[in-house]
Length: 226
Ligand code: SF4
Ligand code: FES
Image 1 (cartoon, helix red, strand yellow):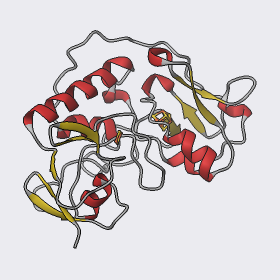
Image 2 (image 1 turned 135 degrees about the horizontal axis):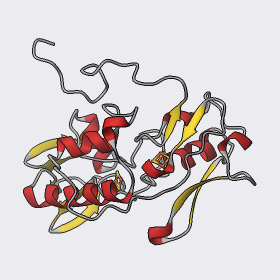
Image 3 (image 1 turned 180 degrees about the horizontal axis):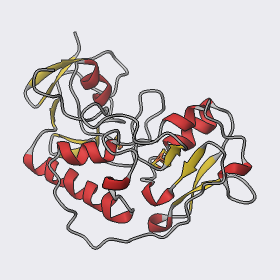
């Protein structure tokens, strides 16, 4: 059987699986944001980085190899992950107390899991207009972490190409492929895969908010006695 060691534990794998896929199949986790099992890995967030023979690699893209030794839950690696998270938090307006995705947000959950306290950098405070032009969906790119999942879902699954990443470096932005740049002028719909993949609160359904009681949201910690 093919297997590798993750922080000292044996992880079996099928040939062709990435490190992250094998770890998840074994019922364990490596922090990640831009990976989604239904899509080709994007390798942009770097939260899933692990160390093999002293070298950092993205576990969502790196193939598993027999007998290798992988380090993930290490103080210095988690410190790097916290830094990445802090950068994402200051780049956008992540005011979780008023965000409908709070408790169901992968960015917030990763920050809790990695025990990130406040971000130590100056906030960018972006001021991009919220796009409320669509009848059923709201787009707030001030919360977008550029994971490109909506881009991949719309292009590869929905066959619509509603979203794209535009610009370079720090100026990269999520844009809507319509002449007006508005979501309401596309054929985006709630049936689309792209309507359900955003890991943060950037693409939100209208008129459904704060419906799940605190304590029962997807990333809420289990209660005692549950
Ligand atoms: S809107 Fe959401 S899914 Fe799309 S790139 Fe931004 S964070 Fe990712
Ligand atoms: S999950 Fe691997 S780089 Fe984002």
